[in-house]
Every structure is written in C-alpha cells, then in structure tokens.
Image (tube, rainbow, N blue to C red):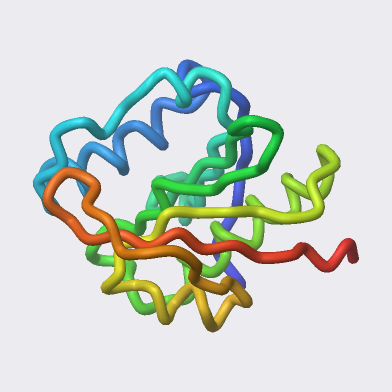
Length: 144
C-alpha cells in the first residue's frame, strides 16, 4: 500500500510508538486495564507509519515454543484501510523468518471473522480476557 511503512523491532523499549498506540486503543478506547506485560520485553513489535506518524501495531512472541501474535490495533481515524491485515501479515512473515511453521492468537470474538478471512481457524471455547469474550485461533504458515 502506498504511503505506509512497516517497521519491526524487538522489545517494547525499542518501540515507544507501539506502546502509544496500544495505550490509546486498548486502554483509553476499549477500557482494558492490564494492557502491558512482561511479554512486551521479548516480543517483536510491528508498527505501521504514514508520514512518520504511527497508526497501527501488533506483536509477535514465543509461548512455550509456539509463535503467537496479539495486540493488533489500528488508531480509530485509520480503520477500514486494510492496516490490520498489513500488521498481521508482517508479523506472520517475521514468524516464518525466525523458523515458525504455525502461529496462534487470541482474538476478540467481535473480530473473529477478520482473522478467519486471513486463514485462521478457531478452536476451543470462548473465554473472557478481562471483560471481553475471546477465542483461540491458529494458522499454518505458507512458508513462501
């Protein structure tokens, strides 16, 4: 997509822009309390920029030898522009680059169809993360 740049860095200390976007979307807009955790220090954080302004983010991390993506979010004014897909695909490529064949995630149920369109399949029961219903999902990476 023209006008967008995706940057990936390891560790939240190297990516203040990721923290800023997540604070705005998950804490201020959606009301999550426990947004930041120890995973942030070891995760890869992807950020999309337009004109040098950070507008979307997500993270990739290892959990018990398995790749997981999460914290996918786009600033409100930039939604509906396929940026969520761009972040997910950038993180999937990073997962492949470091050797993973499959990636999992925990999706808010209201966006389950978004992930299904990207090739993820749901498994297990719906569960609550703080107040919000979530579903576990997985995808086998293509290796391309």
